[in-house]
Image 1 (cartoon, one colour):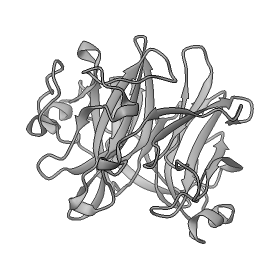
Image 2 (cartoon, one colour; image 1 turned 135 degrees about the horizontal axis):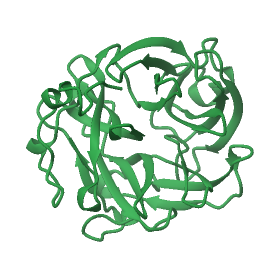
Image 3 (cartoon, helix red, strand yellow; image 1 turned 135 degrees about the vertical axis):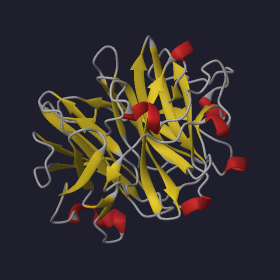
Image 4 (cartoon, helix red, strand yellow; image 1 turned 90 degrees about the horizontal axis):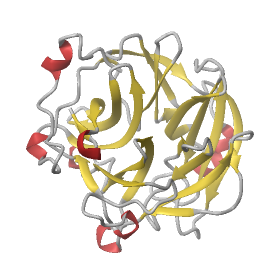
Length: 322
């Protein structure tokens, strides 16, 4: 993602001050994104670092866009996961090859890519799985549907995130609007659900349009942290997306915010929101790197959606960006 590492000097010049850890930051205190260059017009970013140090950035696009970077700063378009299209997803996309919200991770010698197929505002949706040993464009094998919903479902199968718990068990969290964020246990041998049990992790009231989506879970220091996006994306500079978080000692919850409010009752502590020219930041994806935890996200400018990346501080047991 970027070379604004602590040792580089670029990092200090590119970012604003650290948000105060003891209390949620005001919008004026949120840091600007760190320096990134090249092809950074992305939406719904997810990132992984290969053994040779190359960063692979995946994002929403036709066949799922792939960008690479040698230094976490300069990104170039490398191609697509499915350069020949994704006909298997057409029943959910209305015939389009535009696939959403990829989630990438590396396990047992393979890259696992969970991704969404849907149309805007629809619950006729599916999450698919693809794997690769190299992460390169065109190297991916599709393994079919993992979770799907239809227009009579009470939740929506988009925005997947795979997380491995402290005991080594695999879980997939996902969801958008309606009855909120869900989780299912995953069989590590297949990458598919181990059973039909669904856990509810977060939900917002109808007075807020039920607007919660894009879950991402991180485990550290005895807590699972559930990051989500509140409010609305995809409206350009009028987008109201903002990143929220809660934590739990159990991966299946309950997740609560700083004030003890449950995320299943609309709770959440704000991590990042609109500030200055950074409009509607959201769809967070986190990863550890040599200089600390990173959070990638997208935000809007008058020119469209852009990649944002910041480092994450965990001072006081709650995340703040810098």
